[in-house]
Length: 255
Image: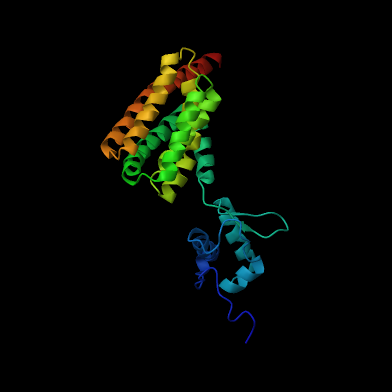
């Protein structure tokens, strides 16, 4: 019996369907990554080992690894073994970033999506109240107050707050989705902060809207959390899209 005969499989390999060999291999490896059999930072077996385990050619194994790299699940470098990455929203963030920078219409659509998603997240956060998420939201509120009238710092604190909102649900996939929406959050927050007529009262009102969301979640009031985040989006949308419309008009005039 060969030395490999009793070796435990990482991937729970199944017979590959010829029409989608690379997909079958990448699905099995992704499952091992996502359920923790392979931890972030761990090295994957070499292409040859993967090919032998699944009964496919090395080019098929290589294509499967390329798919996983594109999905952000592994990192690869020439001449080095592939390594697992922690699941995150980076691939979605790139896509949303391209979209929101492409046109005002795509930005409107992306922010509409964000409103729909985050109202549900706020409700679940109030029901679950994961302590790690509450701590991140609390830290973000402090950073917001320190960054008043500083658009760049305020934007980062705003993004951190909404990440904390996702973390407060205790749901990994919601956290990944919120990470993916950072590009939308950044674009809207930067537009909001670029208003030349933004007053001290307006800066403070933005912080207080976030504080009200946090307070409702800490109180475990799902209805209030949803209502507070809807109020926040209404105020932010009106201001930020006024700026976007003006910038669009200026661009059209200049051209």
